[in-house]
Image (cartoon, rainbow, N blue to C red; front, side, top):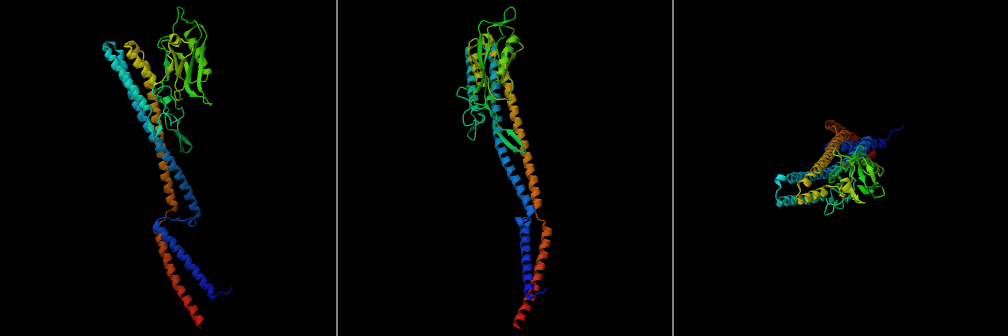
Length: 405
C-alpha cells in the first residue's frame, strides 16, 4: 500500500482534531467536576444518571405532598387539642352543676349554662377551621362547611384524603368531622322498665329508625327502621331483637345492655366514619327504651348539658357525666390516631430524604471526575498535542519544499 504525502497530512490533522477534542473534554470535566456532560461522553453512565434523576424527581414530589400533609395533620392535631380542652371544661362545669351543695342559687345554674353555650360556640368555630381555603373536618367534600350553625347533622363526607408516599405506601392525612365530633355510644338514661316477672311489656309496636351517618354506594344514607312488635320481652331478648335488625340492615351500630340494664347503642367500628342519629317513628323511644331522638355528636351533648343546667336539677346534670366521659375517651382515641398519622408521615419523609441522599451520592460517583487523574491526563494530552504540532510543522515544511521544486 503506497503512503502518500497527502495521506500523512490527513492522518496528522485527524490526530490533532482528536487531541483537541480530548483536551476540550478534559478541561470541561476539570472545570465542572462532572465526567458525563453529554450522553456521548459515556452512554451507559448517562442512561443510569437519567434513571436516577427520575427517581429523585419523583421522590421530591412525594416529599412535597408529605409537607402539605404534615401541615394539615398539625392543624388537625391542634384543633382536636382545643376541642378536647373545651370538653374538659364542659365536664368540669357539669361536675359543679351536679353538686347540689354548691348550686343553691338559680343564678349559678344560669351562669354555668351560659358558659356551656360559649363552649359550644367555640366548638363550632373549631369545626369550621380551614387550611388553605379548604375545610379541615369535611372529609374530601372540603369545599363546604362540615356542620350547620347549630351543629346539626354532619354534611361533609366520611372519606379520608390519602397521599402516595412511594414504595406502594399510601397514608391518610385528615380526620372527617363525623369521627372528630361524634359520640360513639348512646345509652338509655334508665334501665329498661320491667314488670314483676322481669319482663319488658310493650303494649304496642315500637318503631324507630337508626342511621350510622354513612352512605351506600348509590349515595343514599344508611339507616334501618327497627320494629319491635308488641309483647313481653326479657331485657336481653329485646336488646338482641334490636341488634339483629341493625346487623341485618348493614349499619355500623350494635345494640346491647349496660351493667345497669339500660339499652346501649354503640358504633361497631370506631374507625369507620359516620355519626348516629335516632328517629322516633312510633313514639315511645324514650319512655320505653330510655333513648332520646336526634343526632349524637358533641354539639348535641353540650345542648343537653346546657338544658340540664337550665333546669336547675343537679340529678339531670349528673346523668350526663358518664356521657361526657365517653366523649372525652373518643376524642382521646381520635387524637391518638392523628398523632400516629403524623409520625408515619415524618417517618416517610425521613426515608425519602435518606433515599434521595443515597441516590445523589450514587449519581455523583457515576458522573463525577477523579480530579487528580483528569489533570494528569490533561497534562499528558497537552504535551502530546504540542509534540504533534511540532511533527506537523516538519511535515508541512517538507510539503512546501517539494512543491517549490
